Amino acid sequence: MNKILILIPYYNNIEGLLKSLRSIDPDEESDVLIVDDGSAIKLNEDLVYESFKAKGKVFFKILEKNGGIELALNQGLEIAQAKKYEYIARLDCGDICLGKRFQIQHQFLKENPEIKIVGSNVLAVDCDDKFLYAINLPLHHEEIEKKMYFNSMLIHPAVMFYTSIIETIGYYPTHYKSAEDYAFFFAILKKYKMANIKEYLTQIEINEKGISLQKRQQQVKSRIQIIKDNFYFGWYPIYGLFRNYILLILPYNIILAIKKMKKNA
Image 1: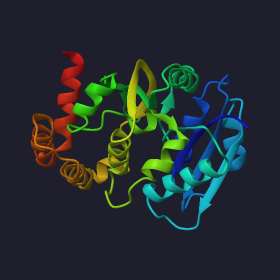
Image 2: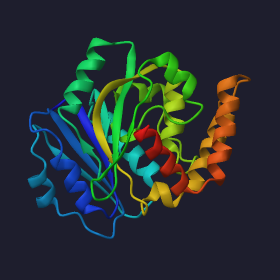
Image 3: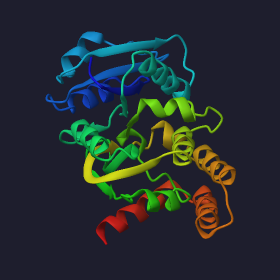
């Protein structure tokens, strides 16, 4: 058995899933767990096996009904613990790995034992794979800790972390709808150090019909509540709240335009 389990929640997006699996480098030594969150479109397991070329196994967990990504992810964490994987890596359907992403992250964690979760810089594209913008994140724990109050300083489908931290922080919170990852990272931040790798190791797809954009207001409201629940009187939390209240009222097309302007600046 490999040490790394790649956790992929799946919901009615077979093309995106196959695209993500095909992007995993054949030299990677990682297993994959696909948690089907009650999809209406049944998974074609033969296509999945054909698309995954890396040195590992593919496992499936099929949930009877759609319960939301938080529950699907938590099912994945339970399985990772039960199977005694040392590391859990995340990937979402439609997002792709760049280079030997998991080898690089695994090596980073081995060389930096004080770091328990690591992400990377990320490229964003549209549904036609047209480049939109680059996401450049703070690399070191101290800056991540401060700026986490603005927005998540780790990109969820780009992270790898030690399975053992779940014993301390628990599973993904289910009461922060559409922002379970942000709350999860804050919980980790209270106990452990985190980092990002400067290389672009993941490419994420920005889909205007995607769940995160359809539920954008809900996501920002949850983010505001998370900031309040982790608040201390200081510049970073105060500015973070102000920033997110502004995002709550701004249309997404304006936010996207600002991000593209930053790219071209």
